Length: 91
Image 1: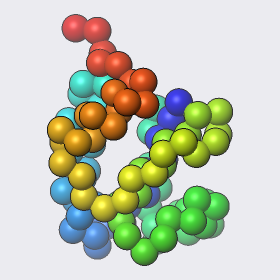
Image 2 (image 1 turned 180 degrees about the vertical axis):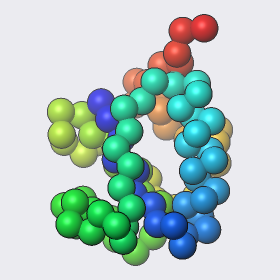
Image 3 (image 1 turned 60 degrees about the vertical axis):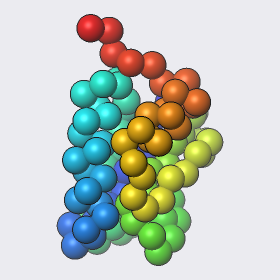
């Protein structure tokens, strides 16, 4: 399973979520593809991100199984990851 993360440098919610996502990656081993809305337009268009950023698209065998848009609290994101079957890194 992997996550496509779509952000933009001008997006304040993206900056907040970048910090939260960095904390998540310290705790969970998640393959992440990071795309910028403006710099990676062609590839971003394939995911149809919509108007609200950031967008986190969870893929299992290239099939979308979950999409999160906008700001999400750390604890809520952890709950979603655990529901999707992600487990914490071994200490």
